[in-house]
Image 1 (tube, rainbow, N blue to C red):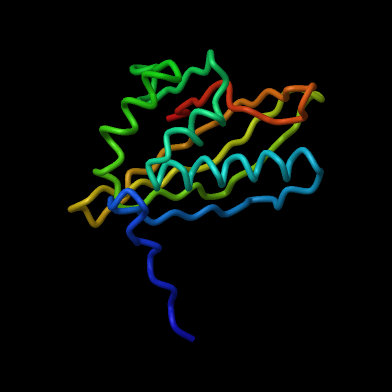
Image 2 (cartoon, rainbow, N blue to C red):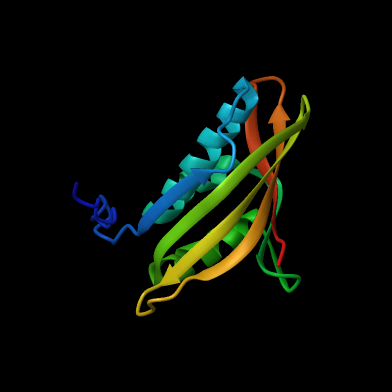
Length: 151
């Protein structure tokens, strides 16, 4: 059985897409958990491809993204600018041991271990992270309101 190569292929913008992976500590069971998992997977793929439009669509207008533990908190628009500049330095980005918990009909959290490898490095930078979600009850869509670095 051959090992699958990293999904490092060119996208329509002629820039390199880096490798991604999502694994689950517990598979999503409910409809809401499955919807949130799809948002997370789409968010990760959009990040890898540099598709800022899709990234923007997964974040509420007032979203806060913590990019460095306790030090750098960015608004949605600041995060998109940061992503555009920083993304080419990433070689691999994995969201592992993802666990999704819907706590109310309008609120959920998803915790995971983020493994990030940069171009020119053989090691991974590993952090525990948490997404907070809100559900728009008018269209039933889940959106990220906060991304936190736990360590």
